[in-house]
Length: 238
Image 1 (cartoon, one colour):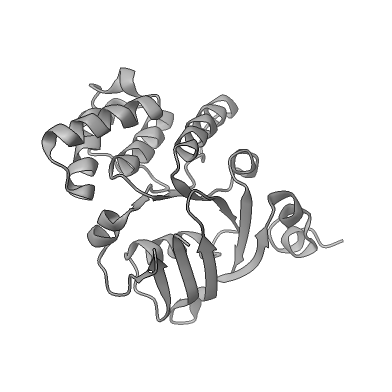
Image 2 (cartoon, one colour):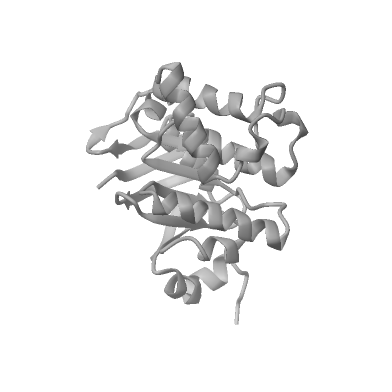
C-alpha cells in the first residue's frame, strides 16, 4: 500500500478537523474526496504533507511512518501537492516555476531537472506557455501551473485541492483530461473537489468527509447514491 492513514485526529480547541480518520491508497489509485465546507478536507492534506501535526494517529508512505517529518522531507519522499488558491512565483516564467519544484522538491541536478520539466510541460499541455511570466497567466493556466509544479517534484502521490473551482465547463474538461493523462502515467492521485461532475470523470473511488469523520468510501456511483451522503453533503432530507 502506498499511503496508509490510521486513526488520524486533529482538533483546534472545539473544532475537530480530523476525527479518527483511517484511509489507504494503493499505488496508481485515483481517489476523490468530497464533503461540505469545514469537513476537514484541506486539513487532511495539511496533515499528510506535514503542514499540520496530528494529535494522534499515523501516516505511512510505503510502510514508513512519516511522524515528525517536515514538509520538504515528505515532498522528497514522493508526496506532491497543489493548493486551492494557486501560489506561483509570479515574477518567474512557467518553466522556472517548474525548475524550482524539480530541483528543491526532488534534489535533481540542473540538466536532469530541465529534462523532467520539459516532460511535465508536455503532459500538462503547457509547453507553449513555458516562457510566459507566471503573473500573466489566466486562472486555468495558473491552476495547470500549480499542478505542473507539484508534478515536477516527481511525486508518486499527487494531492489536488479544489483545482477545478472557478473554471468554465470547457476549462474543466481540459483539466480533467490533463489529470487523466497524469494518472495514466502511474501517479496516484487524491483529489478534493466541489465540482463533483469533474471529479467523477477522473476517479475510480470516492471518499466523503463530514466534520472530520470519514462517512463513506467506495465506488463513486454507490457513494453518491448513499442516503447518508445525500443528507449530509447534498442537504436532502426526504
